[in-house]
Image (tube, rainbow, N blue to C red; front, side, top):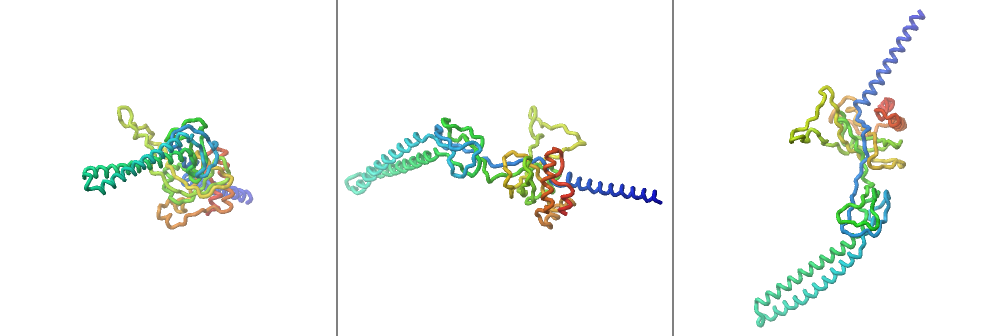
Amino acid sequence: MKPVLSLLGRYALTLCLVAVSAFIALKAWNHFERMPWTRDGRVGVDVVQIAPEVSGTVSAVLVVDNQYVRQGDILYEIAPERLRLAVALAEAEVEAKRQDMIVRQATARRHSQLKDVVSQEAAQQSSGAAAVAGAAYQSAVAALDLARLDLARSTVRAPVDGYVTNLKLRPGDYATAGVTKVAVLDAASFWITGYFEETKIRQIRVGDPALIMLMGFDQPISGHVQSLGRGIDNSNDAPGHLGLPNVAATFSWVRLAQRIPVRIHIDTVPSDVELAAGMTATVEIIPARGDATTGGGHEARASLPVGPRCGPVASRVQPAMFRAAQELNVRMPPHLSLVSVVRS
């Protein structure tokens, strides 16, 4: 009897192990193949290309590379001497045009009062000359305003709050109007672009919460889906020799899923995380439960609330899972089945 019970116990233990293994395999399959996540993410930022609006020699550079600046801070200055002379010339021209206008307007008034003595043709000519002199005066005033504006623009200021980047400008360099001399990264514009396989795009909707882990940091960043890309480059569209279609050869039994860019808006960043454009990120989208488990579409998503589902245990487990994935450099999801069980 004991050998039979022992044999049954071994069978039961084996069946339990098989069941647990199957459950874990099913959870792993769900995370690997169905949950929208990717390790192919990049940090992006708006870069403001700052070019001077006047040409001249750089007289002073008041910032250093990677310095944080606020909107309105002076970046560099262009030698103002030539521009000040231009303002002085414009002021003299304005005064000359004003005096000429006064004389011609006075002449026109006298001719209009002496209608019996001055011919109509002379009166019309003097009136026209006064009008031309008035227009010339207004033109000189506009030229003076432009000269003063150029003088003010010899001081180049930061248009946004951000970080000076790739600064190569030095005093003595010649700055040409319209040619970028310095760039500033807009500190308020950081975002994440996750490149998801096209087979997982159907599970992603605008507004879905997102969890981001940067390769060099342990703390997660929270965000949400801002938009989905609507097109990627098609190499088959490029014309080949003689303008014929350049169609790449493929294996009919192997099809690689294309990756579609998904823009993630950053909601909160931990205080010890420093963002830099180009950083590598792992991105996990937290879709509505109907999409993740049953593959439902808009209808399933519309009936379920969208929001974070990470409990206190999951929030502690997930960073460790991300860290292990980054250290091992293997393809694994940002969380294991334990986190899924906690969420459910």
